[in-house]
Length: 201
Image (cartoon, rainbow, N blue to C red):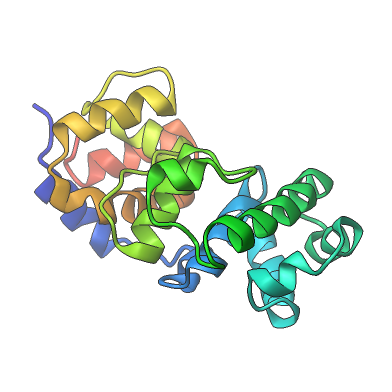
């Protein structure tokens, strides 16, 4: 029998540990930039880089005034920093020119930005704007499958299935809580042991 979202998220909430990038919370600029930089990079590394970056570059106007090389130097050592610097430069220009210096708050507008995919867009919607969106990364994907909520092969498939079965009131907290648990129990064996200990599987 599949565990209910009420039970699962009650347990996950008790075991929640802060995700580093959550501290940027309701700031759309910091949330968007930090999420874009976090791809294929440990959160701890991304957080250190972002703290340095945000002290020097406080908004998209300032970011747009920098060259790609300057941005690259500021965001090193995140993974693929040269590509991300190029995206950030173009992203800043697009936001300044097309969105009146404000981060857009719709999925279609966000994914139109350079370097922004569906996962990043959903994180921005959920964290910065509190708009219900299900964010599925590898942690959410494997936990949803381990719980028996879904039987999927990719995060994109998991996102589609979770939007069908997970009540909307859980969408905002789902990623936050599941990522925290996933970070604590990174292997399949560790995760299954934890879920069994909590009588969730």
